[in-house]
Length: 77
Length: 459
Image 1 (spheres, chains in turn red, yellow):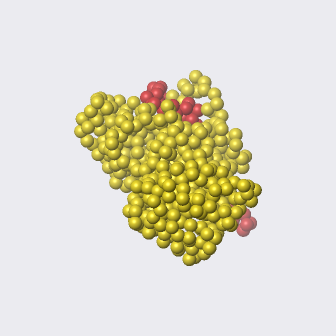
Image 2 (cartoon, rainbow over the protein chains, first blue to last red):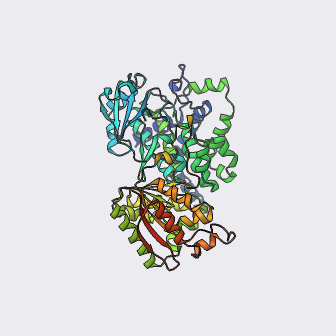
Image 3 (spheres, rainbow over the protein chains, first blue to last red):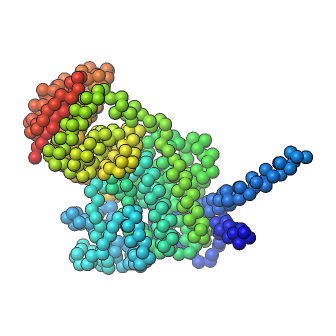
C-alpha cells in the first residue's frame, strides 16, 4: 500500500515538477517548423496545471472520503 | 508530375508522383530519423493498425535523376482522392486531430516523437483518417517539448473550437488561412463563456497573448524548457480529451440534415429513385462516383451497394455533412463526404498556387450523381443551364442528373422572389441540351411533381 502511494507520488511529481532548467539549448533549434517561444513556455505551465489536475483527480476519492468523515463526525456532535 | 509541389518544406525527403506510383525519397538529412523509426518497429505496428500509410522500401534507383541523393526510397499506395482540412467535416477534422495525438502517444512509447502536427499530414480513406508523413517521425530525446503544439492548436483545436463554441463554420476561414486559425484571432471572437474553461483559456487566450510579442528573453527561456516524457504525454492526453469532447453546435442541425425524412418524396417515389440510381451504376460498371450535393449520403450508399468502389460526396451544409460522415463511419462505407459549395469549388492554393490542388485538378470520378441539385444551381444561383451541363460533363463521362421542374414545390420556393429567372428551364429544353452533349441512356419520371431522372453517357 505504501509502495503504491510512493509510485503515485512519483508519477505526479514527474508530471508536475517539470520546469527543469538545463544549460544546453533545446533540440527545437534543429527543426524546420517554428514551434513559437511562447507556445513552448506555455507547455511547461500546462504540464503543471494538467499534472496538478491529475493529482487532484487521483486523490479526490481520498479527499472526499476524508471530508465526509469529518462532516459525519461533526453531525454526531 | 514528378516531385509533389506540396512537398518542399522538409529537407529530409520529398514525395514524388510518377505515373500512378507514389514514392518518398529519404535524403541524407532524413536517414537518421527514418532508420530510427523503422528499427524501433513503430512503422510496422502503425501500418498494421491502420494509423500510418504503408511504405515499402524499393531500390533508390527507381527515382533516377528525380532524387539522385536519395538514400532510401519508399513506395506508398496511391491515395485516390487527396482532400484538405478546409474541406473536411467537423467530425472529420476531429478524427484527424485525434489520430495525430494517438500516433504521437504511440510513437513516444517507441522512443519516437512527431516533429510537427500538420493537418496536411493526414489523408482520408473513406471516413478513416490515415497519417501519411513518415518524415514527421523522429527520435525522441529526453526532455524534448511538444514541437507541434502550436501547430496542433492552429490546425485542429482552434478550428474545432470556433465551430463548437460560436457555431461559425471553420472551413472558409481555414481555406483562406492555410496554416489554420491563430490563437490570438480565435481569442478575439470566442465568447467569454467558452474562455472560462481553464484549458481553453490557456490554449487560446494565454497562447494568443504570448505569441503577440517575441522577445529575446522569452526565446532564451523557451530554449531552456525541458519536459519529462510523462509530462509530455500528460499534455498530449489532456489535449486529446479536450478535442474528443468538442461537438458541432446545435445551430448546425439544419433542415438539410433531415432532408431524407422531410423531402417531397413518397415511399414509392424514393424507392423508384433509388432503383434508377442503382441500376445505372450497375449498368455502367461505375467504380469512382462523385455525389454532388450528397446531403446525408443516402444515394452515395446506394451507389456503393450497387458496385461502386468509392464515393466522394460534396455538401455545403455542415449539418448534412456531419450526418453523411457519421453514416460512412458507422456503416464502414468507402465514402468521404466533403464540405464544398459547388459554385465556388476549392481552388489551387498555397506556394506558387501549386501546394494544394484545386478541385478540377483532383477529378477522378467515372460517374457523377447530380440529384436534387440542378434547381439550386440554375434557379437558386442563376447559373445558365448550358454551362451547368458543360460542367457536369467535364467532371465524368457518365452520370445521373435529376431535373426538378419549376412547378415542383421545392423549386417554386426558390422562385418566390425571382419569377423571371431561367426562362429556358423546362424538361424538353433540358433533354435536348443534354442530348447535344451526351447519349441519354434512360429517362424516368420519378415523382408526382414531375421530377425526372436522366441517365446519360458521353463515353
